[in-house]
Amino acid sequence: MFSKFEPYRIKTVEPIPLTTRENRQKYLEEVAFNPNCLKANQVTIDLMSDSGANALSCKQWSAMMQADESYAGADSFYTFETTVKKITGFPFIVPVHQGRAAEKILFKVILSETQVAYSNGFFDTTRDHILQNKVKAINIDTEAESRDFMGNIDCRKLEEMLSKDDQKVGVVVMTITNGEKGGWPVSIANIKEAAAICRKHNVLFYADACRFAENTWFIKTRENGFKDKTPSQIALEMFNEFDGCIISAKKDGICNIGGVFATRQREVFENFSQECILAEGHITYGGLAGRDLEAIAVGLTEALDEHYLQHRIEMVQEFGRMLELNGATILEPGGHAIFVDANKALPHIPRNQHPAWALTCALYVEGGIRAYEYGNIKFGYKDENGKDVYSYREFVRLAIPRRVYTMSHLKYVAEVFGKVIQNASKVRGLTIVRSPPFLGLFAIEMKEV
Ligand code: F0G
Image 1 (cartoon, rainbow, N blue to C red):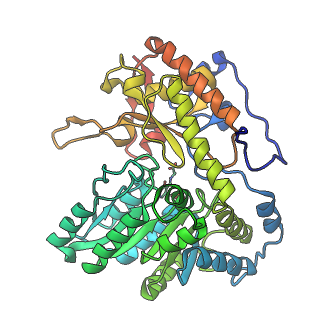
Image 2 (image 1 turned 180 degrees about the vertical axis):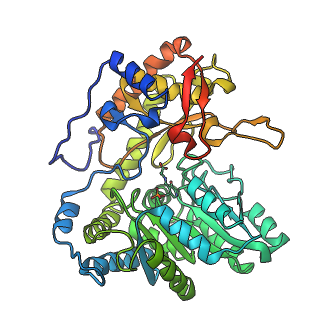
């Protein structure tokens, strides 16, 4: 077998910021040990998020040059609408400036106070937009039985919850892939079963489909009966089960900005459109420029290309293997990121000194790598008695932007990780100096213990 390679070649290059260890130590102290506050030009390999940090293709750039920037009814909107209709099968399409804009409007439109919403894994903005409507947002456990589709919702539990009082349930949101749990895929069988349960109880069933294209690849390669279908056919079959969806084009739209709302419910579409005009702008641009709409139309199509998808998913899996070889304990690799267990990497740091946060700082100082804490700072909270409730995980997420880094960049990251592990005992825990009520993760200040 020949070596695998990126299914694209590089036409435009961007130098990577190279820094010294001494400078990195200084930069980190300047931002009070919060890597999220570093300037991007202080970061060598930025794996903070796969969102919006994608590289556009030459087709996207050339479509952008031909964009129609008319205020309303621009050609670029119709190109966008036609593409989204073709990919999702939904008849009513509205662009928005990013995924959370669609969440904010959709939940305002479909939910009412005292209701409850269920999911296989709410993203934090999704959950918070639901909470803003005084609706409870509850995650149902994922089905641990199948290692291939660990993002699946537990349908027995779903049936049980909806049987209790389906009148109270405002919506079930299926997140594909299940980002917060590990970027884990959801099978078509699971989507179909959950959809049937929702139909039986007359409950809305929406997809948070930010990483829908990655999900199709797992279905194609792992689920019985799909190996001869194209990612586009699988996407259509998936979307067919839902009442509608939201998509952040910053993920599988392979764009830097943008989002999509799509539905088959005329009334929801009409109400959404009203709110969209107030919050995002006319429904044929939704807070975006014509060139953004063009880039999304091409990006969504490219995200379903088999060569692209195979390479993307295999790259993430291979990155996981390299990290393991260098001593990491990781979650089962998903579609967009690898999650590293910080308790295992830094066993000498107690939970109240934030091992995952300490690991993100250590990765930065060692090699200029920026990762994202998925532990107690993000998920922990205080109960009614002021007692700390630790998150069930203490992880670091290394998310891979699309088409940006090559395998050699990721090999370097794995090596840096290995070095951190070798010198683990030197990494120090941290305590919180200042924790603002909002934007916690993006403004928190820490100091070394
Ligand atoms: N849903 C999921 C599953 C997400 O991962 C995100 C964003 C959103 C919705 C919101 O979309 O950013 O376009 O407003 N996730 C990013 C991340 C920020 O780093 O995982 P958005």
